[in-house]
Length: 171
Image (tube, rainbow, N blue to C red; front, side, top):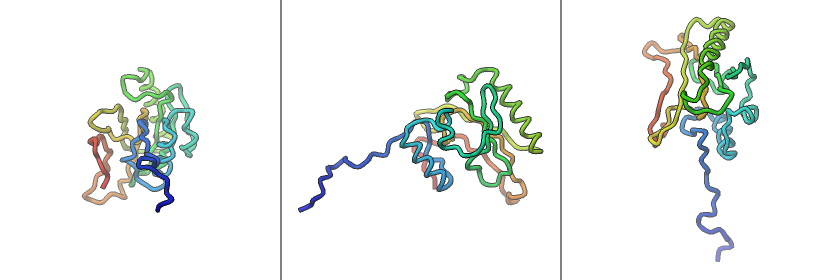
């Protein structure tokens, strides 16, 4: 006779957190932090939560954006700088029209400061019943990336992902 009094369904259910996407995690320490964020059920990029999880210093703060280095930069990059919108918004249409000018000004200043000769900017937004547009956090943030061209193979290009289907599973 079993002394186990557990009933079916008593196991702790893995709760979903609508603010994060667990399918885009790239490393073990990121997974540990994202698991904690999932349990807490809030947005990690909202100002009241950012310091709990993001351990890189804030480089600059404007009226609309915070500038910081990515805590988990992509492979084969020299620089990956994040601009996190200071108010929780999820869609481009929710941004203050003046925020775009401030974003470009902040990224321009950072490229001069770091002597970045070239790279790219990316800003994913929104969500869909069909899937995710590629962000790990559903809070508008932008990336300034300088790929490490010397680290790329001759048949390789550095790419930034936009979009994944609803049932996407990382290989």
